Structure formats: structure tokens, C-alpha cells
Image (cartoon, rainbow, N blue to C red; front, side, top):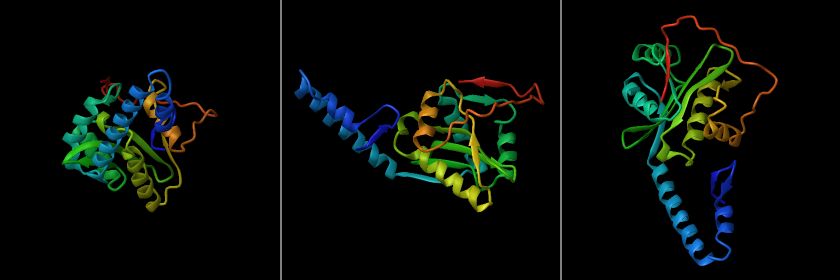
Length: 193
């Protein structure tokens, strides 16, 4: 069974939907959907995953601008902010490339004790093909090489796609803590896409 979204449905449920009064037409639709997924599987074969470089900034920033609900900070996510982040964390951030285009990215850093994922995203037409999981695994292995034993992330409650993804790949939702932050620079304004 090929999973489209482990939280809600899979190919088997699509096939089950093909039964019924208009079964023949629905079976054809199911076959078309299976063919579409097979084509997308071929797309993932041309995707490569590697550590993010400073030179990736323009393409990564362009990707961020396309992600609905994505928060971009004026200072932290500027060219200088990302350059500073990558200098501190040179091996842990990740990009996914298809035909020289950035189709996925994770900013990943650590403080010597715990790793953290920021700005995890996959371009919409490349989602549900394992790219997010492969990028996360790449970043987690890089953290392990630096002797980091735990990684965390923040997903907005309204981010249904992200929350579904993290649960589906085995991350634990924490109900035993509260998250707090304190703004040190009011000029670091967040805008949402």
C-alpha cells in the first residue's frame, strides 16, 4: 500500500472507494490516480539531498515565499541571518534539489545539547513523496555526528500538513510542557505568506 497521507487515507482506501454504484468509473479514476502517483515516484528519483550552502539562499528564500502560512523574519531569515546560522551550523541544514531547483529545505542547528529544526518545507508539487522524511533523516544523522542526542521542532497548531507529517514519521507530540519565547529585537518582524 502506497501511503498518500498516513493520517487520513491511502491507496487501499482509494480502491475501496472505487466500489459502489459507479464502480467502473471510480476504478478508472483509481487507476489514473495510481498512474499519477507512479509518475510522481519517478520525479523523486531525480531529487538529491545535500547540506545547505550559503549560495542556496536565493532559491531557498524563493521556496519559502511560496509556502502558505510560512513565517519569514526580517532579520533572522535575511541573507546575513542565514549566513550567520549556516556558519554556526555548517553541516546540519538541508536542501532537496530537482533539476537545480530547491524543492525542499530544513534549517537545522544545535546548541551543543539539543538540535532544532526550523523552516521545514517541501514545495507543494513535491509533497507526499518521502522528500521531507529524507531531509529530516539527513539532518538528524548530521546532528548525531556532532553527538547531539535529541532534536525538537515547533509546528504551528494550524499547520495541519506539517503536524500530520511529523506524527506520521514517529515524532512525539509533547503535552507535558509549555513553550515560551521573549523578543530581544522588535525590528525582527515576522511576515506570513
